[in-house]
Length: 187
Image (cartoon, rainbow, N blue to C red; front, side, top):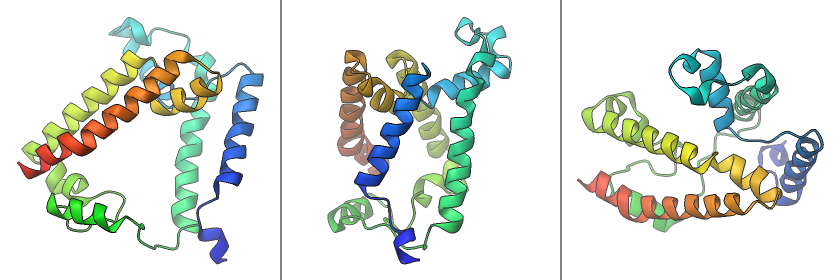
């Protein structure tokens, strides 16, 4: 039973992702989470307010199975495949996070200093969530897709714009991690 609770090794998960991509390419489909949000917004009537959401969302219904699969897969992973152990974070990372005020670094995927309701609904927390949401939405729209779409579908199709987008995502992540998070959480 303990072997089931371990993360899948790259030589199992990598070929499975490849198999999914082969099926998607064969059927002329692409993968990405931001397209699901666009579809959900279109279903909800956002096309009345923005031309970006005016499209035949029924042709994209199949892609909503990705959202359903992520929800079901997450539930199965947490409920049946997790042993409840803490993450194995590098001790230097834990030390750096504690210096920024994250008391339980490594014990939770969602640090309470950000995601606890009291913190999230504070003025600072709301500002962080609103600005972050805007930046993610703007970046996804500007890049023509999200990290999963570009990194999995775009790179597997050898698309240069996806390579540029993925490099940009990583550079942005490094800037956020090394410069902006220390500014936000030490202030």
